[in-house]
Image (cartoon, rainbow, N blue to C red; front, top):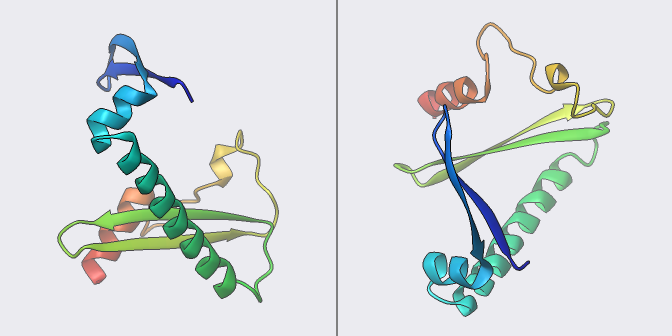
Length: 119
């Protein structure tokens, strides 16, 4: 990757764009390319281990697609991971089927705040 196209915005409008080279992103976010590469490797290993754990837990379940959510809770230094099973694949265009609200849980944020209160 040579760089990233960045948009400066808020929830209502875009103020401008900028192309930032990878070397500049690495320098500003990680200090240098060595730490950037190390962060990528460590994060990739953490994600791989986490996904392996999820798949091992679901070895006896029947599903075609998974929806996996990650939320971090800073005060307790916990990461909450939840998995929703789908018996058949859902097209991404059909967003209505990806999250089915219940009376208790209306969206991901609602799920997280209710889960966090119970923990």
